[in-house]
Length: 156
Ligand SMILES: CC(C)(COP(=O)(O)OP(=O)(O)OC[C@H]1O[C@@H](n2cnc3c(N)ncnc32)[C@H](O)[C@@H]1OP(=O)(O)O)[C@@H](O)C(=O)NCCC(=O)NCCS
Image 1 (cartoon, rainbow, N blue to C red):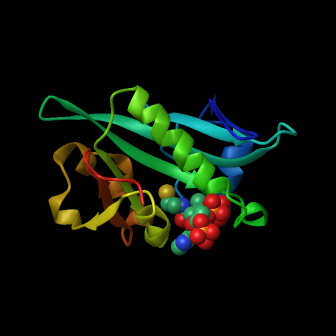
Image 2: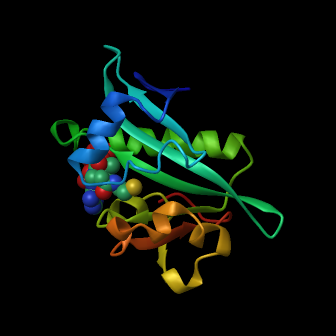
């Protein structure tokens, strides 16, 4: 999948660059391998990874929902559009996979995700499947806000 000169490619959860990018921002890595998630790197035209993201597919009430996680652009590359390109490409993938009800946790990037149609909801309103993810109960994510993008949301 291409977004201009940028391409999203699946990576394994033990990818060294991915782990380093998450550790740089203090995001959890201990549950990556056991999460069953699908993870991606966004590569530029020089085959350098400029961002990382992933999602877990969950089931709630017989419907598939996606829990987006582990989105990070290494600090040196921020503010150049990689985050936007990565989210656009990821949401295309999710749409192709028939996943349109999207959730995520974020510490302080909620204004970024609002640009893609996500809205903050109370953690008390988390579906059971989201509540059961390791991210939801990890101490490191205690202060994170829960966001949802409903199937009928427009992209900002
Ligand atoms: C959030 C993050 C992925 C954004 O990546 P980025 O490459 O800097 O984003 P972009 O350059 O594509 O920015 C797209 C737009 O969002 C805005 N934006 C970026 N980060 C923002 C933030 N934290 N809050 C508000 N707006 C933000 C940019 O100003 C830009 O606006 P514009 O289109 O009007 O110019 C990156 O800052 C990051 O990795 N943060 C640390 C990890 C994190 O918080 N991850 C989210 C939890 S899963």
